[in-house]
Image 1 (cartoon, rainbow, N blue to C red):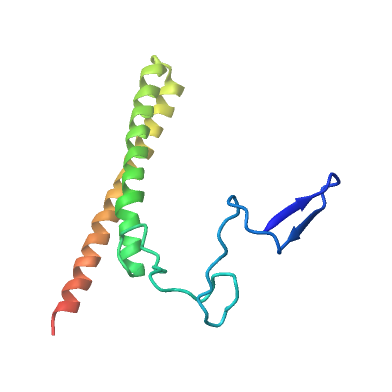
Image 2 (cartoon, helix red, strand yellow):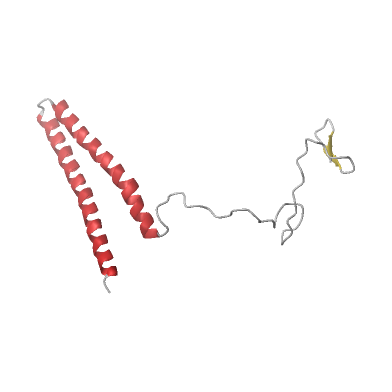
Length: 139
């Protein structure tokens, strides 16, 4: 097949000429419901499954547990450390100023409360999960 073009950008195809070695080979027809020269219908040797990219399990509860344990908790831990460092920075820069010291104390208090809530949530989740697992295993 050879493609002829004119100067105006119009192309014509001549099918009676031999194939150009630069042309891609024609698609193979595999038959089936999409028979034609489009390659459809031929599925031999083609893997159409999509692997799980997260490797977190195959159910929604396993996925949620894995996201919480592998993404949210480490992220929250980093945020807690940064908040403690920021509180310490506020104490250092207060230089005895009572209003700045009060702000630093409040920041430290809120950081401690937030970290306690985070750790309490982890403990509570583990207790509930353990209780549910023990109830499932008893006859």
